[in-house]
Length: 363
Image 1 (cartoon, rainbow, N blue to C red):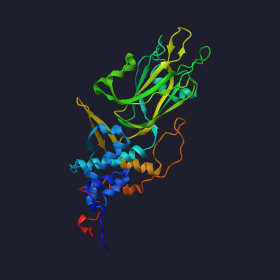
Image 2 (cartoon, one colour):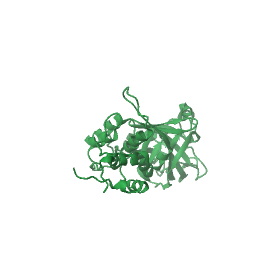
Image 3 (cartoon, one colour):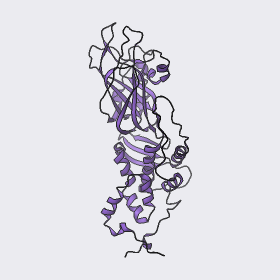
Image 4 (cartoon, rainbow, N blue to C red):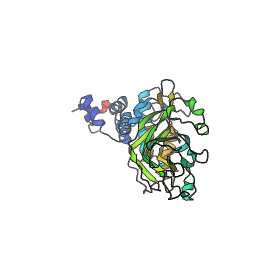
């Protein structure tokens, strides 16, 4: 049998670790951890899959704990490093491979509404109104101050989503003289989670209350100028953002249009939508009050189903005019079955086919 040499064992541990940190794909980290127990120890004990996720998506640094969902009666693994390794390796795949879709589920509140419910925030989530040219929109109350802002808050489809862009359609009042467009001057986006889940049992739309102070906003986007045009406008974030907690706030900054009837400034929006990747049911987050510590829940079975759907094209992504039409891309991380077997490998189940360290001959 030919002599086998593990070149990493020739190096100082810090240098071996530095080499493996250059791997920028979770599938490569999984493969590296299958080479030998020495390589696996470097990858797992140093949390390289977690490091890769946080480097690409800094919002994930707020996660303090990882739990793996069990679907049988077997004893769960108590090796937290192994659990984190599998969970973060799979999470990275999900963040980059799950299909793009609509990510807004329901409206939560508007900072003001002119005529409720006729001009409610709920009107902003039905694109059919825009297509059928119905006068369906949200309107702020009037203001004498052209700099007065407004906010719209939405609940996303999952507690863990990665958002890449938001689309917004200013409303044009075709029933008014000169067909004014009630756009804002600019827009900014924030994402985060509730301070307390109990406070969200309140119906802020019905009571016409603003819910801005009920949330902790962990991400704030740059300010984007809004064109004073009757069209769907797309605002692509500088980098995809992981929303931990599942809530989106749209800040409408400044006003440009005065209503002739009362001489006040208004902002009106016909349609809003967020585009990104919904990570449930394979992943979810939970917050522990009052510490607000964040737990990541990982379901390996659901992740396997989702990735199989991605591989076969059964990904349930929406095919509408709001989503860009892109040619399908080849998966760049190798055989799906091999990846799933490696990422789900468990100390009490499937074993990696590595070469034992004592089989290497140092010459």
